[in-house]
Length: 132
Image (cartoon, rainbow, N blue to C red; front, side, top):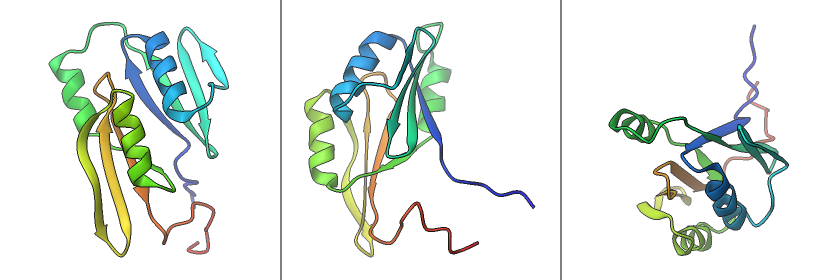
């Protein structure tokens, strides 16, 4: 039997790796643990937010692909996190919304068009593997 261990890495592709590294450093409040010309990695609560340059300018296909992928990062204060990202230049995709049972979600687009999701879910603890 195979076992999935959960999300490990979410990669955002960007045209300007240095600018994206600076922006995500401001968003997260800390420097990446891995910083090379081909990849930048931030350790975020035991998971990895990765930045990777793409070779050609964004095409319609690349933009469409981004719309099909959403990753939600757990946050303690979704309103404050959402506002912080908007202040730093993200654009609203979906404002913080209670989707039921006190679960809140929101999404923004980073300056390169990648969807960055946030979730506050009091019913989910990533370390809880009791369902296995």
